[in-house]
Image (cartoon, rainbow, N blue to C red; front, side, top):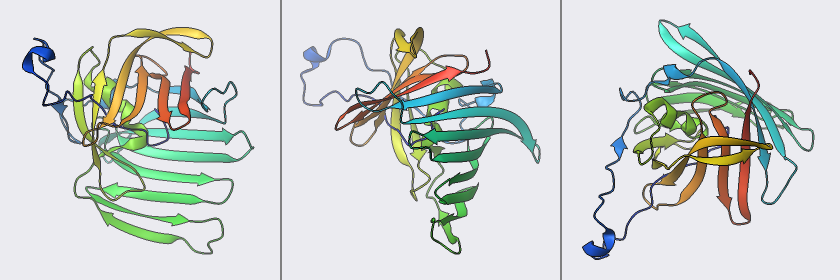
Length: 255
């Protein structure tokens, strides 16, 4: 699981290209998913704990490190995921994020973030209504907000949870609404699962599924996630930026 909105999927073939140049193999039709789709079942995730480190382009020293811990529970008869994320930046600033999701559908339920500089953000999700508050470091009172989304989306900072909850196989393509905590509407993304390959993660070789995430409308590549079927699930992320690739590594802490 990641903690920043990193998104989208699927390289589009130019519609004007001659049919002979396209080859005989047809591209797989994407599996179109909404929050609550029966194909998504997050109950395959057991309780686990992992560490993530963020490396800027060409850097060997991380600028942000956090731990993710998942516990499972029940809320009014609904199975829930409870994620606790505790982070430290290279400058010594700290932050914490507490999130609750429906364990089967991965629908967001609550989000609570605060950092050592004094910023905080909290909201609860009820259907498509998002109600909460933000507080800037110098605010004497919190600033409330109340949004109604046109449709519910999977949280952007946890979108990497979806492909393993559906099932990873080479060539699989899934399309889903992805929603950021700072936006009032989800954006449609594609995820495409590529052939497994070995990647280096904190000095260890790991066989993982690369999964491209792209914005459906523009085909912009937002990230490539390298996923496995065990803790920490996300072992590497490559995020394209104008200055090069940002890398996020993931290492299990419960083995």
